[in-house]
Length: 29
Image 1 (cartoon, one colour):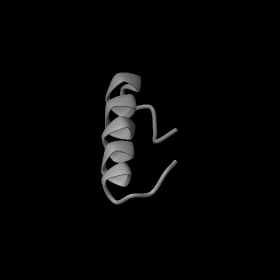
Image 2: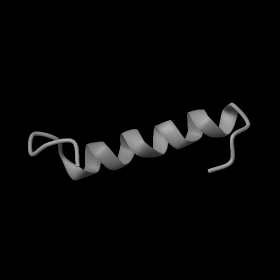
Image 3: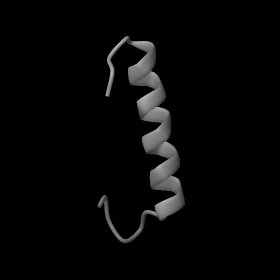
Image 4: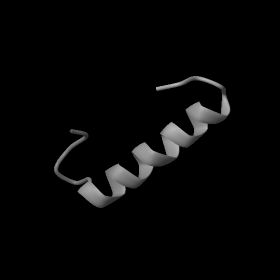
């Protein structure tokens, strides 16, 4: 996705954090 230097676990964690931030903004995804 973001490149071979990015670990799948790190990417998943960052994605979850992003979703949480979006949820706080009141945007349902």
